[in-house]
Image 1 (cartoon, protein in one colour):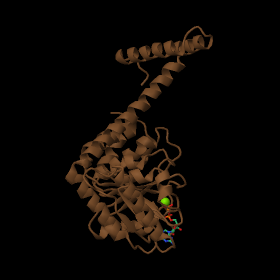
Image 2 (tube, helix red, strand yellow):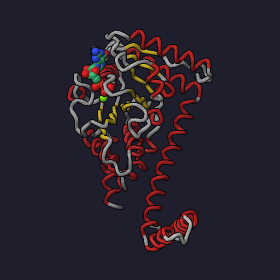
Image 3 (tube, rainbow, N blue to C red):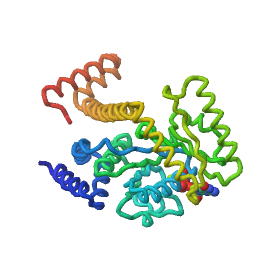
Image 4 (tube, rainbow, N blue to C red):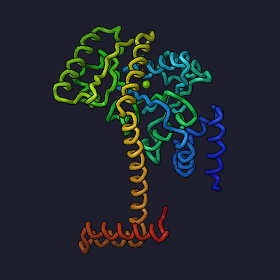
Length: 332
Ligand SMILES: Nc1nc2c(ncn2[C@@H]2O[C@H](COP(=O)(O)OP(=O)(O)O)[C@@H](O)[C@H]2O)c(=O)[nH]1
Ligand SMILES: [Mg+2]
């Protein structure tokens, strides 16, 4: 067995038995990518598929972390074992304040919760693989729900709605109205809305605007065929108001997904996308290798000299790449 395989196997077994340090190590290995991450995916996959993955998204400063922190307080009291993956462009790897400025990791260091921050920079394999990998690890070792916090669609390369069973979109009176949420593409991905900072003026307006937008999407037939309409939860994350109602909405959405078969559909689509990203990454690495070798460089030279069309060169390279793979002389 390779060294990577050996470490991954040992660490995974320990994490599965409840060792929190091993879980931390496992997540680092997954985040780093490469052979160890692949081995961990193999080990974790058969154990996964049970946790409810809840995405929390919205503009920076909307209160996502504070709200998540409130859920992390509430859920263990109700016998859940929640985990959080905070994907944050500004977050250091071991930030003490990832759950907002009032709630520190130490407050939540109990056995029944786990919080992990993932910086968006420095991923050779990309977040597109690191995020599903980390969520799978949490799921496999028994955390449920698994909450993934990210800034809004289009601001990071990870698509939270694609990664989650239930997507919560947080807006604030200060951030703007439903029109902005709509422009940011958040309206389509929301299963639940939270109007946070309801202590601020304009909260009722934000709610009304969202209701109007939802009415419109109903008229244009965008509403869920099974009649689901995203509820709007008013919250003040700083003092925890609305956290209960948010959790209730999340649980209702889960029931709805299960009753209508959409849970299975979403998961099927997600796994398919994960295979596609992985395949894509492998194909790109292979293509880069074939382009960089002698034949690749020669063909590129011929294209530059106008002796060969780019299409012909690409077709030749593709053929070589596939032949190499089949005869086991590939670079991977
Ligand atoms: N007034 C008010 N401030 C809030 C509320 N919730 C969060 N905040 C503050 O908003 C700021 C951003 O919160 P944070 O949770 O870090 O937002 P994130 O970037 O979406 O994760 C922090 O200073 C919070 O204390 C709220 O309900 N009311
Ligand atoms: Mg945050």
